[in-house]
Length: 198
Image (tube, rainbow, N blue to C red; front, side, top):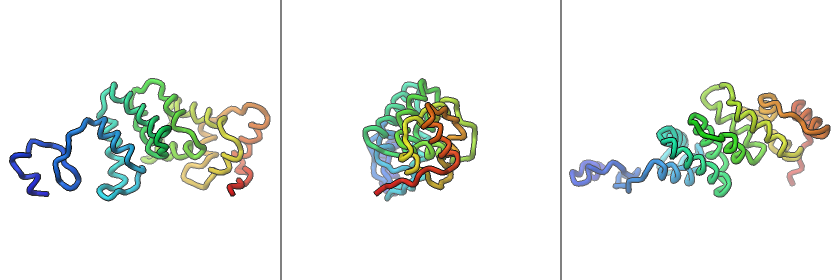
């Protein structure tokens, strides 16, 4: 590895693989795409720790131009809808929140497809300490409560860092009808029916 890096004929190349060989130079967007679509967020790989991968995704998004941010938002949606990745699209949407992304609420709607996405999204948002939620995120979380039924809520109502009832108390969804009012009361009182998952 040291022979490769010290070779005067290839010293002008800035990109190297983890093994020290010359890597084909790629753009930040290409690197972001490769990183996002080849990882399970925060899980270690052979060459990198999961936290290093997450840090690289965050750094790459922070360095993107406004035009590239639009492409990163599309990649976030693609990672969730086409490639069915769970955590990395949630993480990317939080990273993109720091940029002036138009229609951020649309992206949040695309990445919240399951009940537990709501809790995971908040856990990621608060990973470095609690802070107020953006209005766009609160609005989408409140809307998401209308997408799911009691079975789905009870299936993912787990004792985690962020609980389902925590999300509900933060975003204050308005029930549509008596049945949903009763359902939201069950979430608040933690009396959802035990799901039959077999």
